[in-house]
Length: 89
Image (cartoon, rainbow, N blue to C red; front, side, top):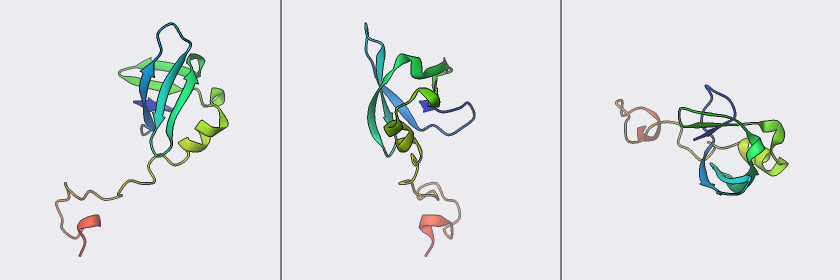
């Protein structure tokens, strides 16, 4: 998973690390795939890739503004109360 800071929601995932290259491909949710330089990575730990926002192209920053916009805000499948969110009549 890809994050802009520890403790924040994930915004995407690493799709490809290019061996012998200084680039990798990341998919930003609701934004698409982007090729980024390795120096855009601030840290990697516990399966998380933390990005350096100041080193990202403007197109990536724009995509990162709305990664969760297309998600349903209430759970359709795990709702315990039928009056909740998407199950609301």
